[in-house]
Image (cartoon, rainbow, N blue to C red; front, top):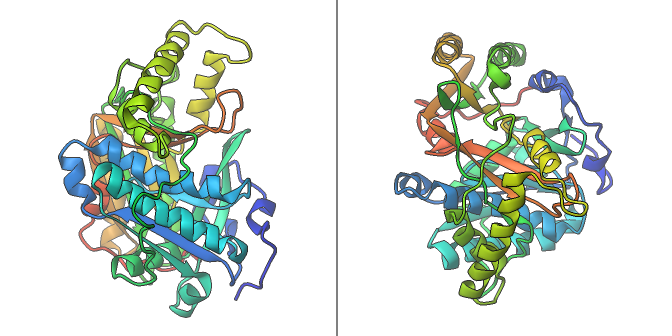
Length: 389
């Protein structure tokens, strides 16, 4: 059992810069016993995606993280984006704020988009009592940002409890809105350059040896390194912009607070037109350098992660896709992992940008036509994920 530790437990963890290292159980540290895990997702997200609302689904999923970040008041805490929702963890001192922020997002998703969203907050002690664990690591893809990686099966267990109606957080009262400052979705979908955008989900089977699971992850990650650009779905020159785009209407819902939706749309139309001019021309203005901003955007993108298993959104050629699937089929037949793959022609990016003049902006990547949600649906046997170590 983990002993109670200070609220800055996560902030004290040393970030890991080698993604491969995160396949190994030794890279993770158990969360303190008195911490909590939060989880949220959109009910029926597959149907919304099939109806072409994938960008809205991703924005609402990212809103879970955005609201928690703004409620945290600068506290560093672990979170992970899941496409149609998110998971996060926090110390007991943050419980009231975390509950309030999550409840407000649940209400906002319904009021703004007609999405039924569910959420839960689960004590880490309960997760351990159920035989699972929640361990975390920090992965630093660039010098200015890092993302949490999760292992132990506890986050997945908490999500299953949420879907069963346990540990439920009720939506905030009618009219409540979350603080989603910084949440945006202005980039256009990024077309595949190598063949297709491949969403990959690899989950350990119950009872599988951690070393065997890690070996499968290592092989898959090594294959992606051979792809052009390492399989990164954001092109080296950065994503493109168009004006106007669907993201403006979605962002207006996120940023209007209790003000006029129409007025906020008009404001965003004006500000994005000006911003797009600088992104297209790459002209500097004051302290803002669009070329630098786009480079940092690519560097900070979370196109690969460990979230109780390996998750990747990569720009993949047909040959590598075939090789990856062969490795996963073999590991599945051996009882080591379960997996899901889903192909689409583009990736999308949803962003949390505290300031365009700093480099700590966060960028969540998913497939543009289903992504992680569809890859999860492709898993034939949904495993009761066990600890990686």
